[in-house]
Length: 127
Image (cartoon, rainbow, N blue to C red; front, side, top):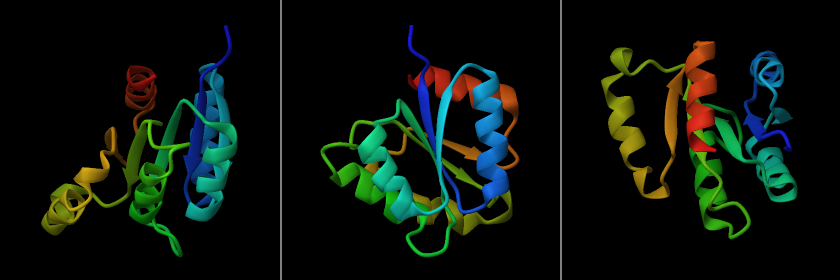
């Protein structure tokens, strides 16, 4: 049986390395990108089973990347989990901001720092 594949898109290399290591240790094949544009290209090329997408990135941010992924026939069905360091309890406006993008159907949402068991169970549930 082939390993499940995950694409991690985050502008912080330490984050992609950490999450990638956790997933690899749990049997996943991992691809990483440090920008939205690179992540879109990699998603189109690799067609991963799931994408972890950082919301706050310079350049093409996470929400713009999500929209681009959902509008592309090659990537629109890939489950996307939004990941952010913005804690909703600290920023009441963030949920309203995120709600504007609900039509693009993120499949999940996790706050940093991510609990390893939550990470694995969330991605397993989506694949």
